[in-house]
Image (cartoon, rainbow, N blue to C red; front, top):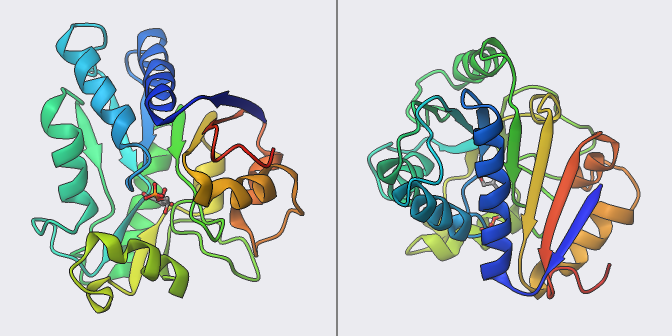
Length: 239
Ligand code: F6R
């Protein structure tokens, strides 16, 4: 694991955007794996600025998002579909975008379909990740095994609590989601995980140096050959 410690969230976002832009410059037809949540928003903003200045061109890029709530209305402002359009896709020229379908009537079929789409794309070149306080990556929640493929998941109580900040009431947070599995994520040639703020310090320490266990899904990243972790001072304070 390569660890990059930076001063603050702004520098973290710039660094992450630079790495994504460099990936796209090197391979214009890159397949990017993208994440939602608060952490990557600054990197998306920076990439939008770079795009507007003509410093990056996503015309050949395909993007696959990690996860989506289920059930959720795509057009509703709580869906990850909506989030990605608002925060990134509506402002740049990414050629093709894929997000698990939170409206799918048959979630098992949607998981299978999404897994197939990722594989048929030729595989993700660079996967962007955040990390949950409970160590989740994507919505791979602490469990007694590492789920391999894209799957339907019951969200952890702690994830529902953490994500309640995006909803009016905690009871409005969907209880289920569709997420890429650990193997889906591991097929990515490169992984870049971002973490900001003191609240992430403990899970970052455990991810980097703790026991590899499905009880802490992020710990499996210790086994991936090309992982870059960018942390700000607060998130990296226990390293
Ligand atoms: C989002 C995702 C999650 C988040 C994680 C951290 O697509 O898969 O794993 O990356 O919950 O969220 P934030 O960045 O809001 O702290």
